[in-house]
Length: 110
Ligand SMILES: [Zn+2]
Image 1 (cartoon, protein in one colour):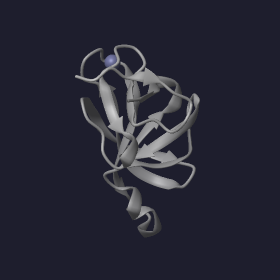
Image 2 (tube, helix red, strand yellow):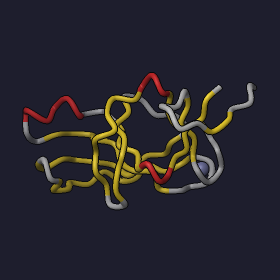
Image 3 (tube, helix red, strand yellow):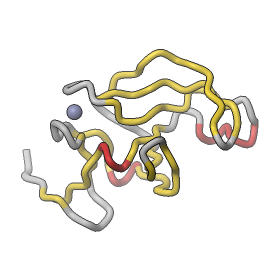
Image 4 (cartoon, rainbow, N blue to C red):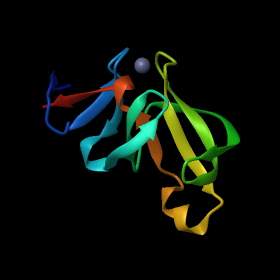
């Protein structure tokens, strides 16, 4: 496997800050404009090496959603959540997408 080094630009690969397991590809980054508990968060179309927690309904800023927490499959660190279902039809585009807190991942460049 190729060596990756940290970078300040948009990463090619996003890995778990704890254990450096690959979590998402730069190509799957949709938005960096999200807010989470700890601050900024990124939306990804796909994520890998994550484990889904229990589904729960949660009232977020943009409405009511069914979400599931996501954890790193290797170290168990909570990374963010996945939108499972949006109750508001205008929010449906978020369904199946992953929100990952920026502080929980690091950007890597090849
Ligand atoms: Zn990890």
